Image 1 (cartoon, rainbow, N blue to C red):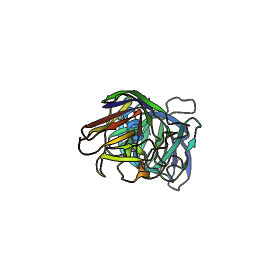
Image 2 (image 1 turned 45 degrees about the vertical axis):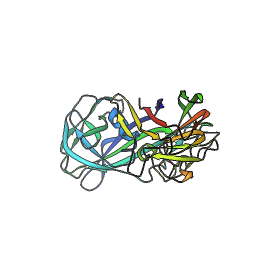
Image 3 (image 1 turned 90 degrees about the vertical axis):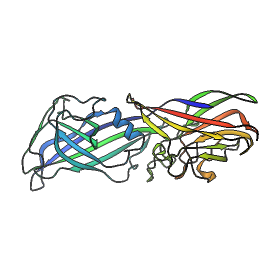
Image 4 (image 1 turned 180 degrees about the vertical axis):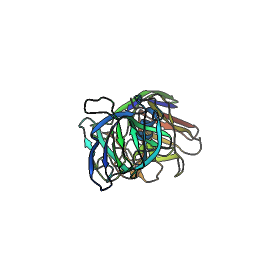
Length: 334
């Protein structure tokens, strides 16, 4: 059976502020202490929301272009050679706010300074990067939202404070959101299924907690078969080094595909395959234990499944039958 989800929505926005100090360390009246909204690129949203860059340091660059950045931009318009590392500030999740609708918003703040005299002249744009890839950026703007410039002297230092704000599922709904449904056929007849998306963080019940593990970044290429009681029966695939294939579709969406797994006829038999969990690799039942009412996995540091599939009626596999299963999950960042 091949299972496909509809799009699970995620959201990321960003803004920056600037300050300038003279050689005596005194903050001048230059800069933009007021936050400036900017564009998070499609590639940047993918890297942030897939977990690849969510809680990692990045690089800030400045430039001289007067052309607005868009979601399709891959770099600043006219970047300068000068760069500075912008580092994560403090506990990554301490800003997490429960929105009361099944999502949380987390502000991830990165701050970094160029050295004194590293930038001399007039700049008009700013962006944060992963290597050469623009994650987010925009023109420097005044309090009215109009493009402006900033002129730096040889005895001045520019400091960048950059915030990316992500909105992600947090497990706050009474039942995990359904992101797909369909029907499969077995030798016993027809079975309907629902696919339930899991929260962004492992420890989703710990709002604002200190554990920033992101399921999409940590999940493994495995399937756990579970019974009607929500406890694991058997795991296939996976391993500590194996991850599902996550692909950026370059259009504001991305997909995670789990390898097709086959359970051969004489390997295993089971009369009550009520659930399948895509992602966990631990043999511990707590890593894939399902709350059969809410359809959420346990909130802990080893529970990294990203989808729970429920079948009605439960599937059965005899010792003369093969079971073949695969899943592709889809995400939207726009």
